[in-house]
Amino acid sequence: MLFHITHVHTPGTCPYHNPEKARATFGRLLSSAEQSGVRLVGVWVDAPAHTLYIVVETDSAQKIEEFLAPAYEIAHAETRIVQDGREILKRRAGTE
Image 1 (cartoon, rainbow, N blue to C red):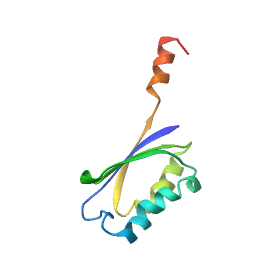
Image 2 (image 1 turned 90 degrees about the horizontal axis):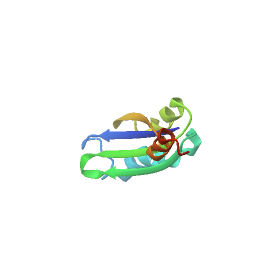
Image 3 (image 1 turned 120 degrees about the horizontal axis):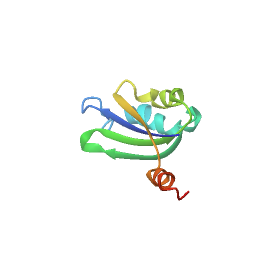
């Protein structure tokens, strides 16, 4: 299943100007995705808004929890299940 994660932190907890904090949070999070059982599809950043948009593929909410754990102290995240819109349209139109 695909999941869209919106990960938001504050300017006060932002690791951008602190390389050690960046490695310990987002660096660790991104480098350990596969160990958590999560396949990274893509990561996009809106730096001025202190927001990351992450799309992952996995089969369990627990794996997402483990994946996000390195950044729990600096931010919060909202996770949504998403589907390929083209596939839904094909199924609905009967053109599979």
